[in-house]
Length: 491
Image (cartoon, rainbow, N blue to C red; front, side, top):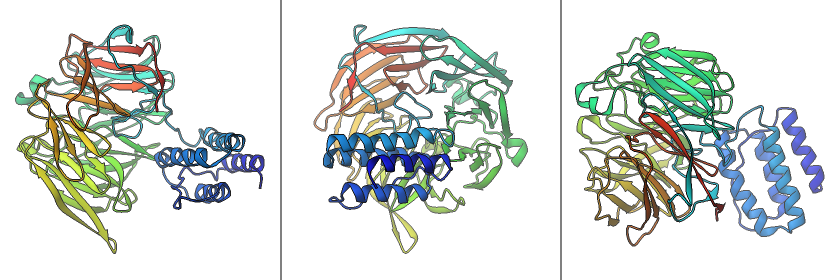
């Protein structure tokens, strides 16, 4: 089978609906181009989830690049790209120009796209537009030609807007009645929306504060379905609101809501399974958001509740393992971070801990690999080269080895109460809640701050978004968009 026949064959698979998006990593270093080709065709028939395709495609292309003559490589890369593009009606693959959910395309805070400059001044990062909005702590997300943002209006209504990402022009607006009043000790952080939406290219999934999940049409803003978990499941409303940011995986959307963790059909809103139930209200519900990882050879959902960490089977909701986590008033806030088989968390009133998850004969075991005295708060770290860069309750920044728990350094300087963090290569962008944007170099030896810049006068608790050559910053009462003036391809 020559390369052009291979291309046509791949296209045929897509058109007939056989194309799947799971492409497994090559298992032997010395495989030839032909063996890689047949492995790809075999794996295309064994469908997995969309994000597996994104993660596995890049390593295969890199290996092809190392082993293949340029002329043959170009045709094979065209085949791979063509297959993915033809598959777009079946699923949406996030491009480098998208930031479709909480913490980015792979939900790990990493950006893949044009390399950033080494400075943040106006010569390198220029504001292109700004739009006044109602208050929100919900991070903006970017898909295609539009950016989506939420807001709370008059302490009564919740609003979702789609804006042209390049101009700020409003494309549509949808609103519903749904705001709440949070308890007194959370009042300083407001009553407005907190959860960041998720987008699969066709639908937008928005978490309303009253424990309501709303699915909107991306193009029109028309409501497709909604689930009111308080009414449907007869559970207490969460006193702090719907905080979890939805996670889309294949044909499902996952949320920590309804005093539990749920999997729903993303096209209908039908609940497929429900697990990790709690009491809801003041002491139940959650502050964290789920993610997906392969741990101990098993693809699973990793979930942090107010009391514990858990691994959940995506197919049936079975709890594969669970581990209690100490925190003051259940303030387990950050999204779990996975590196290898270590699950990293850092809690308010607790410690920074690495848990090792193993599997033998289908049974999972969790052990504490290490423990560090530092306490996290709300910031979720990024991991670069096996090192977690974490913003702490002390308002300082710490670099810690995920595998061993060895502290490499802690910054002498303190910053704000919160950082939203995005990494690219050895660069880190961090936005604190005081409107200051910081650019760091990931350095195992010392805290290496390259530049800082004030980008907002109002509070900036929402997670920043980075898409293409743009940086999106949700101030409390506005959305500001910046553009790198000179970028290059990331290494």
